Image (cartoon, rainbow, N blue to C red; front, side, top):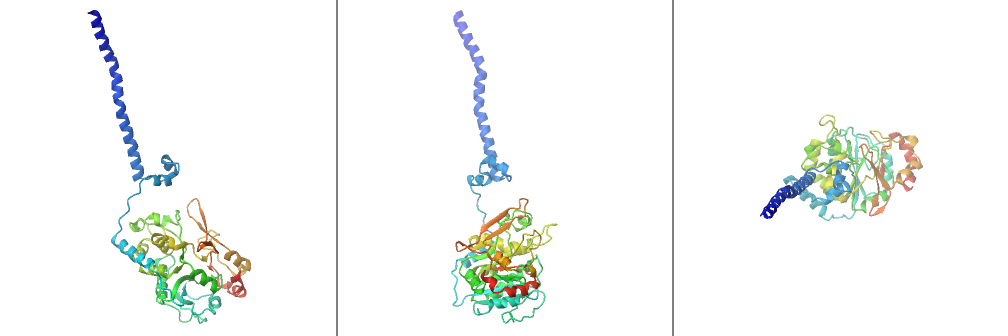
Length: 393
């Protein structure tokens, strides 16, 4: 009996001693559930509110934010507004319709100038002997110029005041396109300023532009204050910040793209209303630098070159590009410009990132530039002395 009682007491003591261990074992699944829940919540938050800093990105992936975005499921596509849908339908119809090539296709040279055209004599030599292959249009925003070249006489269109940095600059570009599109033989459209000169002879320019299927529109991403820093959220939902682009205004454009620009009202209105100087305090936005690059990046990114065929020298790091005076005009200068075969973009952020890309023409690397600016009027005589020899360098 004592033995039996002792055995029972031993069992009771063992049960008492083992009870905490059983409770500890019961707690393990609870902690696992809590841990899994926290990790799941962490990943959900990271997906909904993605990390912006590169350090935070590496918590999730050794490849940084790009690796994280590739790993996570894509965000659902935003449904287009009625205006966006209509705009995309019209633009796609224009771009997907095969162009009707006329018997004598022309290039429309569109001069956006305030008054006089200082290099008219040089352009006269450029055009000589190529009648029937080009058209000339002049938008003189301030004073009616007096022309001596027969190629420019009576070629002014109805013009209006143009203010640098404002939507009136884009309005003038669209006005030139509208007049030039009226002539069905015009198949390519070149925007030029009063300080532009040709770098090559007419045949070279004609073949360069006519025998390619892209438009030469400058376009790049600048994450700095003079790029994305100019973006306004008032452009949402149609224009998102990730699509906001920058580029020089001096374009050449095939007919389909010119028609698409003229058909656009949605994106034009966004830039008219929310991209202008002195917006929201000290923030400045210049529509002539952002409207067309953003428009084509969104609607036909593979249809543009992403560089302009008009050379300009920003190497001095000033608000305005380098100006060329009489003493600068040499064969060496012209040779240096015409031999450039890479385009360069410099961002305005703290890194001052330099983006260098080859100028590809139908898949082959070629010289980038057909025209150049800013040449001052005093350079005319020196240029005339070198022309046409410098165009064959």
